Image (cartoon, rainbow, N blue to C red; front, side, top):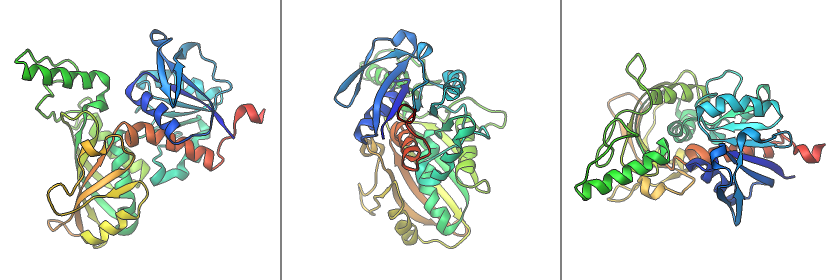
Length: 344
């Protein structure tokens, strides 16, 4: 069986990754259609060894499309995902628009793949926030074995999480610093080159940012509503790859060695944890990779049953495009959908 797949936002960072990952993983496609806004019509994008010409979302007929990978931002998704779902295609949405909707599953396949079966109410499945995705992959096996009660996480998030303009801003500011030119901040509230910014998304009334709230709310929906989580989300001058410093408190006693063994056998995780210089993973090594990497595993004696670790992943892949394609694979492998053309 093969499926017709549309990628909305095909000209963006995540859209490019979605096309690459569909090809890399040999997803069973009968046809792939690249879609974007009308101003991008005719732009060429790559899909494996093929070149696709971008078509306009607003003029596209989804009546014979099986899966739509949506990565065009919240406003576009809010307008178009229900329309596309109503035409019978299953939308896997990368924006924050539908994540907390009660009729929309929020899925990380290594964590709660079974939840994908609940897509039929709206024909929409939500992809989590990039920083949440890698965190819950790491927490799931530890929660099953030791019972995670509380999580304190500080993120070190790359600029690619804010899009191509943010990557360009880091590049241009860095160049300006070295050339003694004027450093202009447009995308970010402060200069990002050779700096860190403890502010991602908008501020909320309680002083947390929306990004921090997403991590709290999404972890509860995906993993366990009883888990208490607090987050501080920070933008750092890295192009690709989010890092997280994670401190957890468990219900059951846990040693670093036990945690290491549990994580080593968990899906989607690679443990690189040597107590020596370079015996850990940084975002530079994680860029372009599919795994969620865990390093610096150690016991935290300041709380009962405490554990600390370092978690790194490519935010454009596991944090977005890879997770979306993995959700599509769940739909296919569990026979939750059938090709519409062949079924007709």
